[in-house]
Length: 442
Image 1 (cartoon, rainbow, N blue to C red):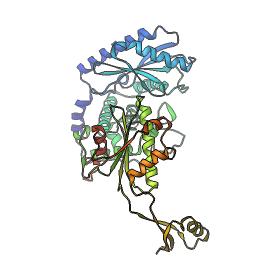
Image 2 (cartoon, helix red, strand yellow):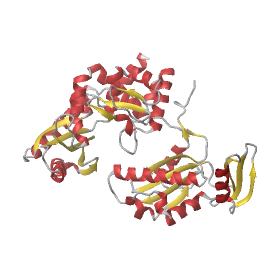
Image 3 (tube, rainbow, N blue to C red):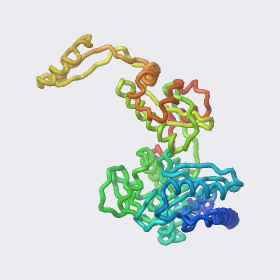
Image 4 (spheres, rainbow, N blue to C red):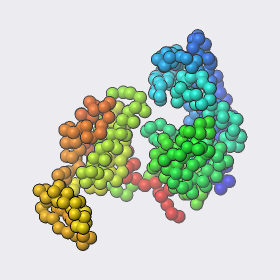
């Protein structure tokens, strides 16, 4: 295994040349931000935070996060507006644009590096006014706590998470953030030990110290805030993929698990139904949150109507098209359906079942388990027609967020095998594909 990890380290540890180039960009960006921020009395200083400052950045992926710190008594509106003003003025030569977390921040690209100018409050530890306020404390804590060896172990873990497509805390991904990778290495000491621990993960296992209880599949405690569960933002699927990927690597260590790989598909994508529509430009986190909630709500409605949704996903494209994707067991159902009621022994329940179903029943009987059953004509047999009627006539029941209701009205429903949009077609293929590297028992 050591040979494999040494080989992988060649791609995860920046060379002296790359470090020198990155350092020059950081110095340039810091000077630009400092020049603009120094003109405002509300600003107490600026600070480089994140993976670059901690020494855990990857050669091919290293955003620079420059935090502009404001007095705690700065009104929120002023905090937001000044944060954007400083960001745009600092990065005016690099086509800056606004991105959103809890508050807006400004991003631009200098050469091959994204630079983020983010406002935060200059608070005492634990007295958070915004979610960004923790980042400077995260940075200081990790600089103090991680050894140089551990920093390189974090880089290995980040590369592993990226290759297995479970890296990133944004809503679109719901994966493991860079900070979570650092916390895991800090808790277990090395990349190998992290994989060993994750491969044996138990439901609800707590990593870190806290007196608070949390109801998530994995609990990862923020070392600077023992009431904060970093695992709450990670999807169950991504936790599962990390567990299986860890077992696969420990079973058969390979550099291939540090590289992106194509998944294989053994089935046609005709059973993937896609609802697509155009949306107005807005923050990626906002549109992703809206489209994911819509996808989940529509899947719930389809399941209740008898269409078995095996998997679902969401996608957005560069031309501002959003898509909800559903892999169905079948897009058409039989005309008849059986409803199984209570055992005949329970008088009250039997009477209620008969009263509710008698008019709709073609026949009623008692099955071999002693339960009263009803055979009825199915109300919806075609998934496409069901979805169309649901969105057109009953959008409140469909669970579409208010911010999407006007846009989703102009929707299209297609199956995966005839969709023309390349990005959405790839998402449909992803829905039916298999990562044979981690779904393996050998």
